[in-house]
Image (tube, rainbow, N blue to C red):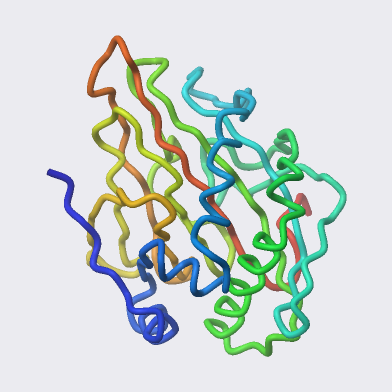
Length: 250
């Protein structure tokens, strides 16, 4: 049986992030954080059936589909501004497998990116990112959004082919959207400065893992199908929050 995560009460979120570098919210808590009904988030789930293949996988795999979008959120005034579509870029220091190159992915569906619930979700999380760094809510936060589907087309799917890593941002949020017909996909979180770590498996749709990217590294283990003929997949929404601008080639 998958090992469940220890959940964080919403009123303890900032203290948990400050103390341990990570927190897990159940779906109801994530919806309350955003100030939206739970079904407002769940309504986006069908959009994961329309993710184009990731053509940049250097391991030759066909198991990952994704889109990408960039936004600037200012929690103090509740505003979220989409920026012109741009490449996703990470330095090799943070992604030894796919870093150092501009990766262009198809943009997010407007049904999600222009929804009021999307603005509320990004602003709420950006506010906690600012709190984590001791910054005012008026500070602009640079947000990248990545809807992923990892499937078992190749017999095995790798949510993090680059291995345990950091992302070079302030806050990383991994939201589980769906698990269908799979085993594996265990989340592992490690202290970046020592041997301490933990493992668990997110199984509740729209539950969320929040990570202080300066303090912890993370990975998810490969997935395999429960039935090789039927296949399976794991859908997530990964959001990253960063002060000072988006990452890009220097």
